[in-house]
Image (cartoon, rainbow, N blue to C red):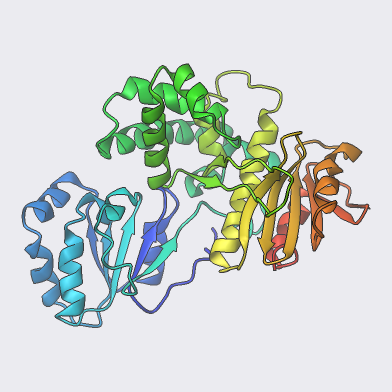
Length: 384
């Protein structure tokens, strides 16, 4: 099994995360005595939608210090008004609200976020949480969702991930209400998966998917609000050199990305393993910063002439560069982006993460195998 890094607060909180990341399992472990209300079953959600005051009646029958878990709160967002009333007028302060989508919460229903409830995130498993037990290639190909990690065979992992794509990415996003044409959305998904980890040209993607540019933007908005991906910003200092400004889009899990792209059924481009590895390391960096409440920002750096650093952490005038390579052999050219950045700014440290086995030190840059990098990250020796 595994131990999650997320720590439970002692006050009300939202817990958001894609379905299948282990939110309910974590809650059952940490809040065994809580009153659980699950809004995922359609009949249950419909009952509260028709009669929101039912929640008030149920809660008022409980002790005021009783924890109350409402699972999938985005299914019936009107309940937030009832919860607000119970917290402000009745003195009930122990609510846990989970969701796999923030979209409807963001539509004017975020009245609990202004100091009344902490916002927490549940991510797929990190290497720290599973005691670094996965081989790098397994993590790249099949991701870090708990059911994928715990599956014993490759066929089980692939079956789970393909089912995840079919039931969650399509049906769950359709539930959001703005995706009515599953044909166009399916084309978008496939093309967006092949653009993963890259700067997105909305016009080109719209043309390839045979949909409008505005539709592409709305699909990415849904994708982000349902926590299936996020934008990685470009670092742009106040300098004369024109750094690239457009962000990159990263999927939340490399296994889901692999399944969506059809990588289990067809050959992929030569650089595909590198894209998967970038997603894996991105996930690990985000997990370290999220669960560890780390300061600073995470982005990338790129110039128009092609010099690039995959991941750049910065806090004030401190910078840490991380270059990710799926190669098993180190090449001097891996340092090109790092050297280019150092001509303008001083780096606190620089790292090349690769699939080789030898640890090196070249031009003050640490070249480390991926498993070693993740252990150092966990120990606070990469991002403090």
